[in-house]
Image (cartoon, rainbow, N blue to C red; front, top):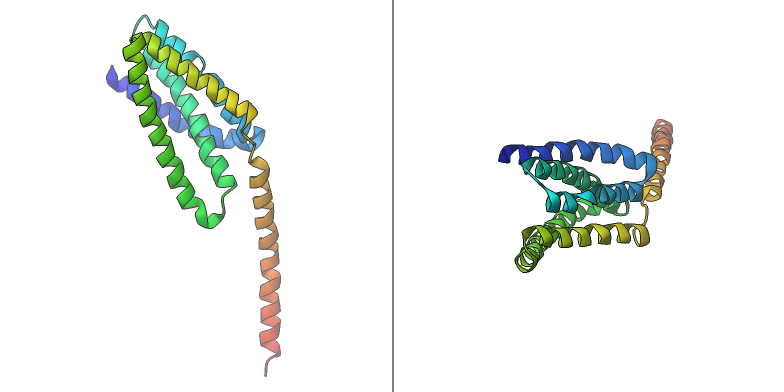
Amino acid sequence: MLTVFVMAFGVVKAVMNFVAGRLSERIGRKRVLLLGWLVALPIPIMIWAAPNWSWIVASTVLLGVNQGLCWSMTQTSKLDITRADQRGLTMGLNEFSGYVGVALAGVITAYSAEALGARLGLLVFGMAVVVLGIFLTVVWIKNTLPWAKAETAAHKTARRAIPKVFRTILIRERSLP
């Protein structure tokens, strides 16, 4: 049963990474991020109220949806506003900060579970994270899709200019003695 738990998360997150990318081009990065946080709302409650392991697996499926939408949008948004020569560093910093956050969340969750009990500790911490994520997305996060569209437009303009440059060079070379 443990493999179902892990596989459910991995498969769902992989599919949602693809969906998030396609969806973000239609409705924007901020809306996809918000959708990811909204999907996470029932997760702490499901874990708290879980009468059996299948509820934990179902909450893990929702976590995969949440992570596929939210994590993908953090990466996509950061890449939208980063220069091309800094994208590798941006991806690395995003992964680093994400996993540091996961580690810190694990420590905080352990303390809250110790203080309040496993189910209540997970409920309180999980709801705090999800509500904070929704709040910050609504109030603070900017949609970076306009930056991505501007960069795409700039690349299209640059591609159209390249043949003219080559034509100019060819004409000059032909006129040389």
